[in-house]
Length: 71
Image (cartoon, rainbow, N blue to C red; front, side, top):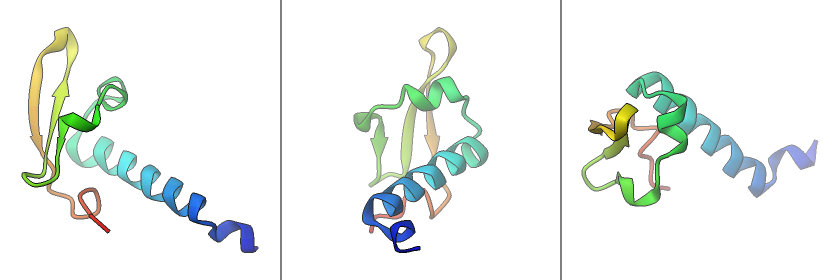
């Protein structure tokens, strides 16, 4: 059971939780999610710049504390 609590598994769990929160809370499409770059995320303002269909830009506010958790 020790292998379930490795640092790598913790990172993967945090990543998966963030993905689910973004899809559910913000309501973005999977295609929009996979096209997010690090420079599109502003943790100071809690916003994400999303490029939708036809490269339309949307600036979305992240209201979930779990997604913007900084530790």
